[in-house]
Length: 94
Image (cartoon, rainbow, N blue to C red; front, side, top):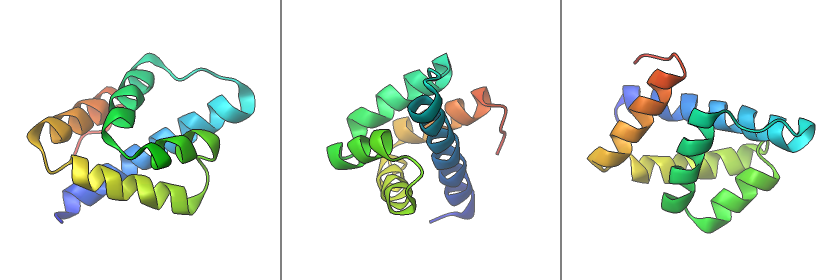
């Protein structure tokens, strides 16, 4: 896998894990761009991974599972564009 794809996936997992942790622990709702992206991602990853990310986002094994699912998602052009747009909206340029 290309290095830039790994970097992108790492950024996405960190952003989502942080946002989902805040939502779980502090009751802070996800910001609009994160919420919309997470809704799209949940539909394309395994149900088990999505449920684990929502219940225990800080778990390293769960984050690794999300990385694996995102790698599969990134094999499609639509998946790549979704990740690039999400990162751009978060202020991260690759």
